[in-house]
Image (tube, rainbow, N blue to C red):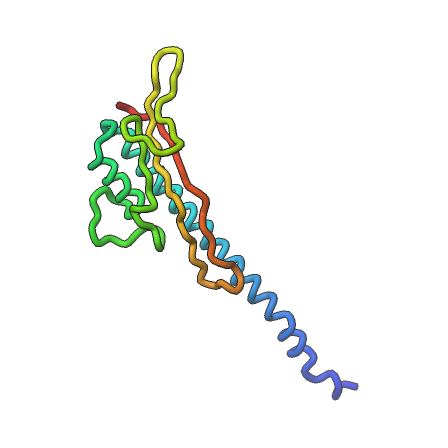
Length: 150
């Protein structure tokens, strides 16, 4: 009887190894996607925080904010982007003087108008390293609006 049972454990392991390895790769890739998304959210927040202290409508400050969202620094040439595939063309910056489509950067209140700034990333493509487990995807727009100090 034992003669017929030789190698059963190896066959069982081979059958279970495929779904276990797929599960491990999937968990790792989803974790990587969440990490990338979190990086993008923080970069947008930092760029918006930078714009809140700048005069509305200054195009050079908007370019610096876009650089900050992509590279993590306001004036960065030759730097690597914070997230793979992120470009300044994906960043939109808006304020009361330079509005974006569909964004209102002034809020009426009982005692005047509150000016805001908005920074958003549009159409960021997430490229999976293990496409047979988690396919490539496009993140939804990542946007933040903050009150301007000026």
